[in-house]
Image (cartoon, rainbow, N blue to C red; front, side):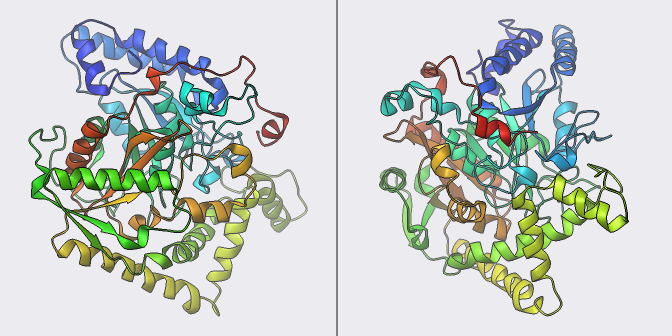
Length: 519
């Protein structure tokens, strides 16, 4: 039952094969069994069981609210949740409890979905591995599946792999079968990157299609709530519920169309698929390249036109992103000063001393570093040279995508990551900025342009770890993009993690080094 899709569970509810309360208990028990993954910061057991009971009552009365009624879901811990801690995986907000729900969270609750927990992440979503949060790193569930264990032949538990980030906890929650869907945030690939490495569907919608109200901001002009599910059709169901105008977010737009049902009669012969030549990036593994070619050939055999295209300014996207991201981070993080909410240092003496001490204690090195560089870019003497120029380059990147789609190309097919998931030890040997630049190279340009993208798992690597490819479409063509993604999903035959046993050792507690990073 835990390995089913949302649609299958909803059908099981209606047929009386399981009740929402029974399912909720199964998920909560599985969370306890998979605590070694460190996917959750907060588990909302009491309120989840209450919500599940309410869903069960509606079901017995023959009045379910919709396809998500009684379905357990998880939320990345940078979305505000009423009377539930929202920490952003930071000491700065370790005791912060909002008085309201983020719009996307409230929409799910309005549909009867059952919130079972808040998921782990990189601190304030600044990272690409979910290894830099105050509550310790997240472990990839595939680290303990048979294919990887058999490949490593290792007995020790020190060779587990990362989830990607920054929404690693959400990806791990869906991949480990503790949640049927999870919300993430996507600013430079933070939903798609862990989606690819954990083998789940990860959707970054068009900017403005989903409300950002209640999402603690990283980069306001690029942040998008992301959706993680086990199937493309499930992602469409969730997107249909979450999309639309929100009076609390001026950047939102009315929903363009219903997405609940994706057409089953899609014909690949009617589309043109673009392959960006610039995405043959240095460091791209042979296995990713093989999968990329495999799916491109799949389109060609089905009659689609597959053409090479150019996005010439892609090569500047990462450096441009660093300037714009750090500048907005410096602005957004200024609100955490110890005066209004969040952590407050006991240091007294002066307001300035308290302010400095609060931020030193509350933020990790990564966050402080981005604040410092962001303030540098925003200095009067640097503003034109860095920030304004980066904005101009962003426009060029956006225009590249517009030009390609104006030539008759319906969507782009690209890698999502350079390689499969790295071992935690190897991943943490490089600094956060270097890792982010490497991991976001294929995903970040989409955020610059504000267009939709979805990662679909396609195969397991030789190491037994997931590989995912990315489909990119024009703005507000999310339904068409998901329709094509479902076509790919139905043909690649990606296995479920439930097909394999858990090969972990009994002792899977955190190492001393990991514990040292936890609050």
